[in-house]
Length: 114
Length: 345
Image (tube, rainbow over all chains, first blue to last red; front, side, top):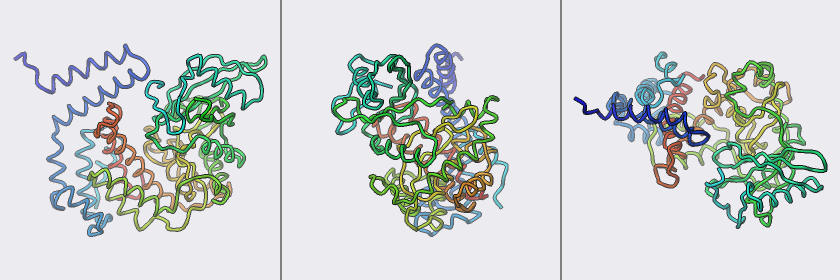
């Protein structure tokens, strides 16, 4: 008790930055806003742990580096449905952390590749 | 802002236009342009892009008060086009019928003002978030697709030879893609959606030579908009030789729709209306080519995010803003995946 978790510390600093933004102006106010948004990303990353979901999505292709290499060498076809579905799942796992309010997040989530 | 300015090569000493010595130098520069005695009044910094510092300048000429924009390259690291070349392009674009701010004067090294230029102040709203949303710009938004198409058709109507005396870069679509892929590989990162887009684009990019001048950054954030629509096209620093569809595709990139994603052309229009208006103004572009360059444009914006983030990650420019923009790569990754999978965004 009384011992804040890492998430609670981040939340506290994020709320402080929101207050600070109101007292600042110009570039500094803008940077305070960016900083608060950045902490919100870190909070979501700690809660959602996207690395696991991303790795699982790309596992069938040997992981991120091998998949990218396959596209560069021409071994993989960028129009392949199964490949697109795997990339879509990996992208969604990341964007859920980085910006779940981005319009394309919902659009991509709601549209299956088949 | 004034304090993060480093001196571009060849321009030696650089004066602060807000200090007495710099204001006097600015006055002499404007005098050269207008051919009359000038007394500089207020010099107010405006929030500019990452590569330029911009000021609004008030000046007394005879007994009239006139307003100007003084803009200079903010940093040597950006390797942007010299102001003298930008100004020459801007003047010629104006002569072709593109709405631009009239160029008043370009600074020489002995002006000690950096790589800079003065243009007339054109009235209008530069913040796209405002003119895309406020009701008083409704008529402007309705006219804008046609005006953008007409401005680009006029610019693109001049053959590449019209610009051949200027030191401009550029090349075929395939060349531009290859250069971008090289930058991507230099960053040594793996972004599956980016590789997906590179692989999808590779067989689709045109291989023929550049046919015209592309503005290179023709998007909602670089327009001055008044009640009637497009008042001026700003920021000519990325101009290069290419093909018409590059500018049209760039205008459709998701990042400049500012949330108005149902309107693919800059947040205010449809692709079909853009292509039709471009044709009506004498240009020619196929919807399929537009789509290819739209994917190219989204990928190019994604590359900018990666590069800005790398400025922070590498320690070159420690900045919360640049670190945060690195996570916008995920937004572009989603847009690219959507475009390649469904052909439309």
